[in-house]
Image (cartoon, rainbow, N blue to C red; front, top):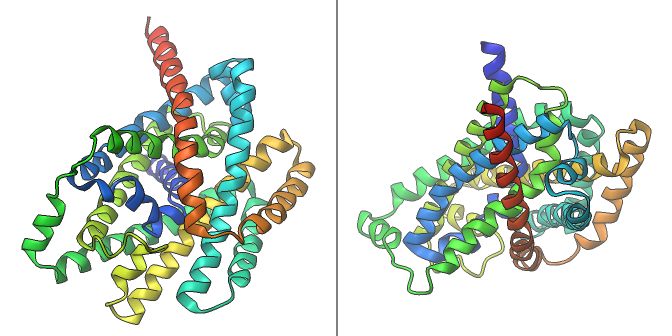
Length: 354
């Protein structure tokens, strides 16, 4: 039983680590998709846990059912050969862009917060990503089981500090703010946010079922991942909402929040953000290399090196601009694939019970 719980936690932690990247931990992603929509955005952030759990479990279930252990095999089974060609290209492209954005995020942290040349931050994350990616799934599970608890502790600490130094009246007013625009915008933002994150995670989540066949372990792992992602999104959204509108134009709004704390707190948050960047960079490079290598170990290592080298030039672009352009676009393209996954999951799950 203890072994089952530990393995479920490792899967849940890897799920969280795959989703939480530079955009999330810096606050930029949560700000764009939830914080700016007031109390309605807060409600949407609470619903993310349910969707992440259902879709995560659906991906595990279908991957195990079809024996599909990379995102290309997975989407062929789910969508059919014709539609899968389109999504194979889209996912491959955005995994590459996603890794580049993570590298750019590392450069932004070094440049904006430490006053160090961004190329050093980019080079460091590129090198360390290669080290873990070469160890494949085992390396991802071990790395995230260490990194994710650190992320959880730091984000919750920021929430407690923020609430602790803020007036109850201000907190109530900010959290209860009514969004005056169309209600469809925050709803679409919620769907986009969950969709693109889930599609980017398919490559990692489907790979787990190759070596883990225990149905209970996979389901608990999806639940832990979904619950953890929801709690972190809500905690971060509360902290960001309290500091509106000062944070709206910042690349790394979380650092504005902790700027008034001790230097130790600031550096702890910096480490947290960088770890989140690192974990997602690993997931993206692994998923793309696993797809392109087609289970050939020698090709996998060489392709991993090539992907990382190719990401560096794009990572020199502005971090905030990359997130603002690519994330909503990818969310819109991804939601149809998530629809296919849920429909196929419902069909097979129902037929299995008949």
